[in-house]
View 1 (cartoon, rainbow over the protein chains, first blue to last red):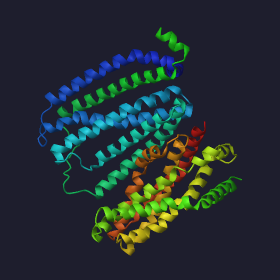
View 2: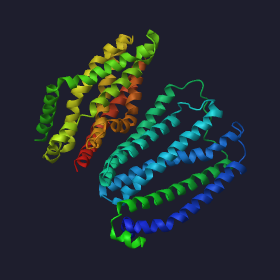
View 3: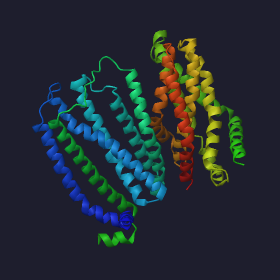
View 4: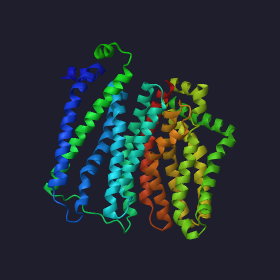
Length: 243
Length: 223
């Protein structure tokens, strides 16, 4: 068990396994997303309050979930890389940043589009939207720091420190924004009671969320392979592998 | 041994800062000027100014501390004394904490002292000034602590100034929220214990964790 695990942490091994797995994971992801979207857009009934407008939830919620998941994964991988000096962990952390930022942006964009029919404005300083916005800034800072270094190993470790400081801050930021929001609760915002959702609406949401997570996993594996190609471009095994 | 290292570091940093007195005043002037731009840009109506004062003072204090951060490790990095700190027998996180203390005395404390004057120019009632100073007293060290991580990460880069702000500003959001809210509540005459205690807990958390991150970042930058 452990030797298998150690082997996985070696770039050549991961390169091969990820190469084999990626198409399968991507296949599972796309079929789950198709089923979920079909269930959400066609099978699920319209909401009695929001009509068909609520259906954007099938994009919004998976994107919001993945934005947090990818930041956590990035910070955990970066922490592992920093503590145990595993090159592969740094490669994984680096691969999480751009998809994570994209999902965060998607969550913001769909939240804003959803806000137009529900709240009557494109942007509302809602607690969750605001924390997503700050999460996007954190992602952008991480990417900017990474790009600022010429030396990959230095970029890895510096951005790992930033990711760790960031992950400690994420709950604090979330809490402070919530607190700020409850004090500034304007009369214009009519909070919809979200949690109670019927099963016919819920299952497509779960299926799309899991499908999107698989999609994210496939993206990260593919990007990690790219990172390995970049980092090991002078290695002997890569030459053998590619010829 | 370590304690004297801590104190030596503080006195050395203070000496260096006092020899460059002009540079020392720049963040303070920046703070005053930014604050006085708002009445010019908006309108000098007292009611409006009192309402925006907490936010303006806190944003200006945040930007002023950020401005003072870039040079925190720069010269020491260039002349090699940062490397000497890293190889010295004293624990690096402790030395970083000493540097934060010295820097706060030079860049944070003046803001706390000048802020009531600015607040009066914004027609903030006298009763709220204690809460204002207390919130800055608790909040500015956190801003400086967070800034040192950014400064340590970007010190080896040629143009790190803007990048430093990008990295650190999102992390400073909670301090801004609680700090501005404390003043706001004080202006309305409401109790301010809540936000001040939250600021104090942020300070405790930052003091105990951030020096380690800064030390790690310094070691990475020195490689």
